[in-house]
Image (cartoon, rainbow, N blue to C red; front, side):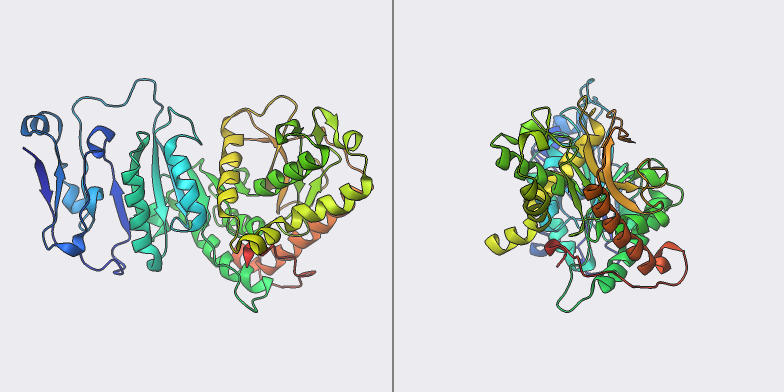
Length: 437
């Protein structure tokens, strides 16, 4: 015997009313559900291959489900209540993680890491809330289907939609990946304005519906200024909770130092990326260590450190694109995982990590009220503190100030999006990284 739930015919997904879908399927039944495309039948049937007695004893479809989700597809139409508690006693309370640009290449690598437990741990149930655009709704369905088919025990819910005010509801982590790439002939100022509008709206949505302590990781470029725009539009969320992703730059710097020193990368520590995620970024070799020793004691080639090393880190993405014909989606996803794990696990004693954070109150003399990549430590509670025991020399400080000047200019360019008046764009130069194009 089998139980089945029938649903009314599905209308076009392009309809703006189809902005949100939600799955809350418990894993023991989840893995036995089969999906059949609604386009193939007027009255599709979802079949759960359990006996009638099992169904009667264990499963009931929520009575208000049809009202709450008038249009849906596949397993996302069904919400089961299990009379017997399925979660193991050792599992933590489920967390809500929202991801924008969820149909893109970076997310294609990231979502499965999130669902598997690789990011938040093997005892952390997760709900994924996936945000796309009207053009990507069907792609979002495909992503959701792949997540279904992967049978992740920790993945308790999946929601997809195009409205940030719905998708960001109760989000405890928001990974903002989606952004418009730079088109042919587009100036950096133009990209700042177009993407800035996206992040202003998402900031407003987070401010209204997300958890009050939501942690926000901005990946979409130009990520530093997009993070500033986002936090300025979310005054009810602590500014300290917003991050701009510079972890891929840090990982690239560690790779180059390890190659030069002839060691494996796990011997490289205390690497900082200062400043903007652009070609003004400053990979810091002065404070970095190799096997516990200052880099300059291990790599004595000062010319290589000051010229080749910095340039290789800054241009690594462009070289990869030329070699492979595509941007670094997979390594970006890995760096997002690294960035989150640095916040949810205690930082090893004496080490630190890089992330773009709000500068107000920083101990380095960097201009306040911008988002700037700096060295941080965490106790593993999702929060962080800025590292105080760093050293500067004229070379390092001069380059930090150059990146600071660029971010201050970008800030003026988006004043209309941060509530600070009329925008004035006088950018010092085009320092766009290849991945933004």
